Image (cartoon, one colour):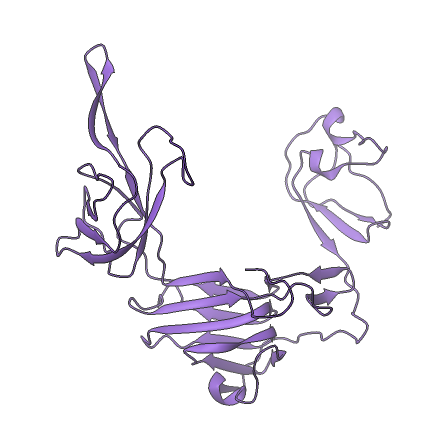
Length: 317
């Protein structure tokens, strides 16, 4: 197909090749557009795709890095190995590859901080109820499959699965190359295949206070039951006028120390720094409204996080 620009008459499925950017473009809907929105130019006299009202998909040709491409093949699992055995000799800042013919079961409580983990086959986190399964790496490149719980078998309650991304800023080889024109910087998960991360749903992600919590209090009274547990982290929204200091909006986060059997009385690990109101206030003309601080559940048992590797160079968390 010849190089050209989109026009209002382009129907769904119409495609064109832009030689200057080495991209294929395909229109993905039949949404009507006008001449003014479809054929305008930007300040430099070229077409600006961000203003075009038709949805489209781009496919860009990739080139190999200098050492050549590792083109992943189709996943055909022919064997299974525990991570602790298959990668037993690997440590911090090593590059790992899971080949396309292999399923590797991640069975470590916590891995070393690898550099790049490239998955061409399948990685399955062992969901056996262990307290934690933590994979540490700087870059995770997925061309095959990574499974951390599924819809049919979510990650077990009481257990934590985590992918923790690290970085070392200032290192010459910092980053990962997928193609000559696709360079991934610090702490990246690239999904060119499949990734499933399914944890346990929470009974309630947001609840409200049933009684005002004063500054210095360490107990929250909630308006409905929750499945909070000791060790969970919650947020409490502000209700007072902004003040001065390091937290003028009076938003707080707190760790849970204990929860009543009913799930409505939560004891915090440390006292609150601010007042959080819950009650009925007048709204004029004999009307009232309820104003109650909200409490959000921040803890999830499946998560992606960032961390910092110890290094003499400047780190990035």
